[in-house]
Image (cartoon, rainbow, N blue to C red):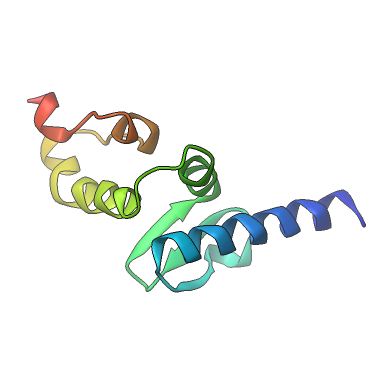
Length: 97
């Protein structure tokens, strides 16, 4: 198996664990690029890095969904966005005011 095939297989395995954990339906990889940006229920979009972080750090179920929802609701108002790692360890938009 080539390196790219192994990488894509790992991405699919992380994706499957993420889908099972979060209970949301995977739609597609944006641009067809496995390991790039993933679309879920045409509402949530997560990078492979954030998916891996969520799984490897055993983040609370639904936290990543709240993170994206808060980013959409408060990010522009705050003038910047909080990355998932910072959100997962407790940073919130209300802390930035």
